[in-house]
Amino acid sequence: MNSSILWTDVGPRDGLQNLSATVDTAVKVRLVRGLLDAGAPRVEATSFVSPKWVPQLADAADVLATLGDGLRDRLRVLVPNRRGFEMAVDAGAGNVLVTIGATDSFNRRNINRSVAESLEDISAITAAAADAGCVVDVALSVCWGCPFEGDVAPARVVELCGEIAARGAAEVGVADTIGVAEPARVADLCAEVAAVVGRERLSLHVHGTRGQGVANVLAAYGAGVRRFEGSVGGLGGCPFAPRATGNVCSEDALLALAAAGARTGVDLDAYCAVAERLGEDLGMTLPGKLHRAGVWHPERIAATATTGAADG
Ligand code: MG
Image (cartoon, rainbow, N blue to C red; front, side, top):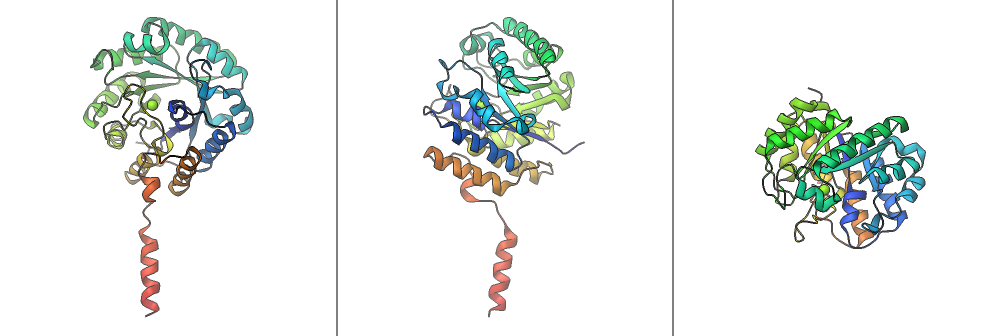
């Protein structure tokens, strides 16, 4: 099986939109560039959502314009609906993500639509995207548990993922939006969804809310998943669990994946430097672990010890 993975860093979007403070456009652009330079295959740069709901991302078009055309094929943006999709395409986006909840309660609270209505929206967006030459990915939220309905039946998730794939999504994502999944359930559901949508189209988005994030990524890798999402430094809370952390930390998970034989394309030292710089820019310590401890380089210790011995 192919060991190459497609990691999408969602920090500039999913991370920053969960902060109460609004960050300068220049800081966002530097963050996206830093992640791409560190080897992140793809970065979710922003969201074309109404500034009324998410004022932190009101500069979405400016962010894309400043980044320029040369980076477009490694960027993705979130769009909540058809209107957001049109704004994104006008701004030059070539890859968008649409999210839909696995339960009606979650979907209504999040985007004020029933699941059936959202599926129709997805059909309309993929049809329009084909004309615009834009790639549409779709992610299904709360696949392992919903804050309003509790457990979600795996069969329902599999059914919805099949619907999403049939409506023209390039990538079908499953998300543990409130961080309640454990590795065994992640491996089981990913295998079931992969059997329906195809392993190469399946993507996983997990949170570290209850300490299972990296383990869940590894479990999915073992089940054949090769597309993942996470956030640099673990940036971003969880809006449904105010005291908890959110997105799995990209560099923490990428370390584990690389050690398991995955080809990530990422320079972990450079990635950690991006996390450190972001923490300084935001005036906070980001929850990820690797950027604080540093990448383990045993060869550097050995070199020092040898020098010491030679010096007597
Ligand atoms: Mg998230």
